[in-house]
Image 1 (cartoon, rainbow, N blue to C red):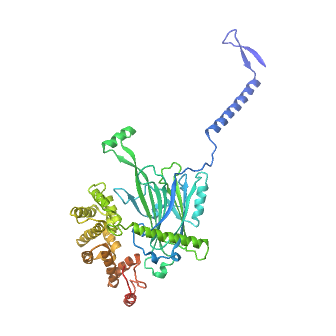
Image 2: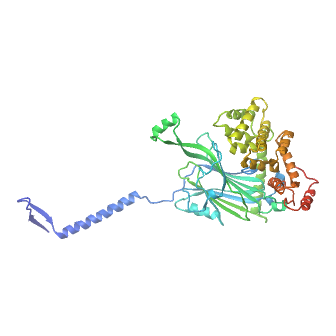
Length: 520
């Protein structure tokens, strides 16, 4: 119904006014239109969540074996002394996740033994950067945890691979995840988990076959670390001006970071889960999940036993290739040619590359003490070793890898022996000597005699073994213990010997092995 009402402000001009019922109808209509618009807008701005497949770069999963531990590097292991029936079974499952789970397992910092970064001016790092935020824990069913994580809608992850292998004594099984087609010529982005089964200190042959062995795990990742540096060079300042940042700039360097976990004793059935940030540059692959399962060797015939035997044979083949790969015509087991040797020694004259060059030379020539000095030695000790190598090379005394290896080892021991005789050696360096040569590292005169009488690294190491056997009869309990622990760590300790046992018992154990004892 419409009525004409005179407007007092507009004289003689009537206006059209709706009744109350008409106004109410229009208000309801407006409300319905507003609700419809809100619902339509919400549907357009919030897409429906779908479980789309996860896109990850092409990655290769592989398993390889090497003799020695992640800390010691290459050490000789007689494959004839290994056996499938004494090798544990190990299975590693690798999975890709869209995001890093933060409410599972425990932070890895409390279970980390050492962090190494290469290349870097500070090879020993206090905290992890590439693998920052890693979490791990021992669970009853690590595989189930991985399945639960990959099944979540937020992750919608995928299993990248499930690898089966074996764990003989003194052998490292390395499980690799590496780019199939890297985008540049630099080291490809990769992740590797190294699992080493070591000897329990003081174990005899019967105990070595039990499951009470030592477990050593290293997480190795190669990727890019973002760094912030102050502007102290013109080129950096120019780049900063472009980005509009007056104080610092973000750089990316590709490094290899190794996180060595604390050593622990293997339980009868080991179940370990690890969650870590992904070192790969994929936008979707933000985290990796790893499940490790270690079991006793299968005893009953069947598919499991056949698989175990095949894995063991593969391990023996890898150890054979590893040994051959560490042999060249210029130096027996040494894997560096003359041209590489000359180029690397040339880098010793560069302050930026000096440490990494010496570390590379030490690793390639099996100079283990020199490698430790390159990693963690003070500037005084490291500088003295570097000058010795350069001087001997310029004088023509270093002409192949074998000579270089012995030069590095002998020079390293002599530098530390001089500091020890002058009472200037630090506890860290003294511990380094004891770790490498046992009780011999506590006696300067004995060390100097062995260096003078040895013509190469092998002769020196055989002499060190013999001297530590002699120290088993020392009057000092501490000296006997250090010698025994050093021999036991290398599988050379005599069975039945206890360094703290009464004299009669110790001598009886030593006499029982005098005949037919061969020092390797």
